[in-house]
Length: 432
Image (cartoon, rainbow, N blue to C red; front, side, top):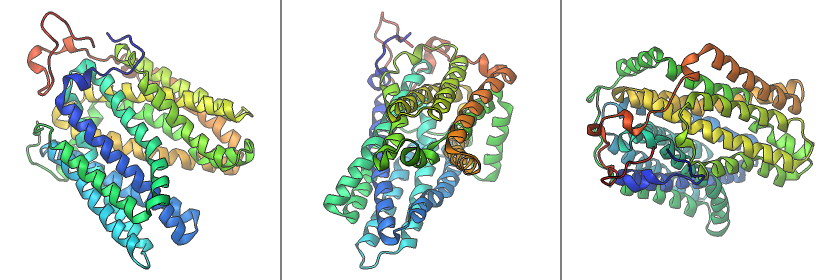
C-alpha cells in the first residue's frame, strides 16, 4: 500500500502504453490551452467585447459534450487506439484553418467560432476513449495513481498553456500560435501510434441510438455510478464560484486584474500541488468515505472565502479547495472505472465526462444569479454550505457511496494483468 507523499510513478514505469498515452495527452492539452487563449485574444481584438470572448465557452460547450456522447458509443464499438490518434489530428486541422483565417486581411469572427466548435467536437470524440482505456493499461491498485498523473498533466497544461500562449502571441502573432497548436495536436497523434490496439469488448462495431440507450440503461442499473455522478454534480453546481472572481478581486479585495487572475489560478495551483503529493491516495481503502470528506472540505473552504477580507487568505482557501477536489476527482474516477463493465466503459465514461464539463457551467450560472439577487459574498457562502449539505445528504441516502471501496491488484487473478503492463519482479509483490 503506497504511503509516500510524492506522486506514485509506478504506472508509468510498468506500462509502456500508458507512457505513450500520457505523452500524447500532454502535447494535446498544451495545444488546446494555446489555442484557447489565442482565440480569446483574437476575438477581443476583433470585437473589443468581453461578451464576445465569453461566448467562446458557450460555442464550444455544446459540440464538446455532443462529441463526448458520440465518442463514448464509438469507444465501445471501435478500436479505442484509433479514436485516441484521430481526435487530436482532426482538432489540429481546425487549428490550421484558424491560422489561415487569422492570416487574412479581414479575419472572420464567425469562422473563428465555427472552427472552435469543430475542434471541440473532435476533442470530445476522443475523450471517452482515452479515459476508458486506462483500466485496461494498469492493474486496479494503480488506478488512483494513474488518475493523479492524468490530473497532473491537465493542471500543468492549464497553468503553462495560457501564459505561454500570451507570450507567444505577443512575440510571434496569432497565426503562428494557432499553427503551433495544430502541430501539437499532430504530435499527439504520432506519439499515440505507439499504443497497442485496444479493440472493443462488447458492441463490436455497433453504433447508433440503440447502443447509446443501452449505455444509459447500464448507468441506471448501477447505484454507485449514479452516486459518483451526483456527488460530483453537488460539488460543481453549488460550490463553483469562478463567475464571482472578478467581483471579488475588484470590489471585495480591491486587488485589480492581478488579484482576479490570482483567484482564478489558486484552485488549479492547489490541485497541482495535490496531484504532486498524491502518493498516499492509492492507499485509501474506503474511497467512498474519502470522497465525501473531500467534497465537504471543498464546500467548507469555498464558504470561508465568502467571509474573509484578506486576499492571501482567500487564495489559500481556494488552493485548499483545489487540493481537496483533486483527491475527490482521483477517487471518483477510480471508483467509476472499477465499477463499470468493460463493454460499457466508453459510454459510461462519456456520460461522466459530459456531466463533469456541463455541471461547472450550471454552477457558475447559479453563483452569478444568486450574487445578482443578493451579494457575491452571500452567493459564495450559501453555495459552499449547500455543497456540504448535499454531501451529507448523499452520504446518508446512498450507503453504496459510503461503503464504496477500491479494489487492489490481488482482487483480480494473474491472468487478468493488463496487456502492456510489466508484472512486478519475481519474489517481490507490487504495492497497490
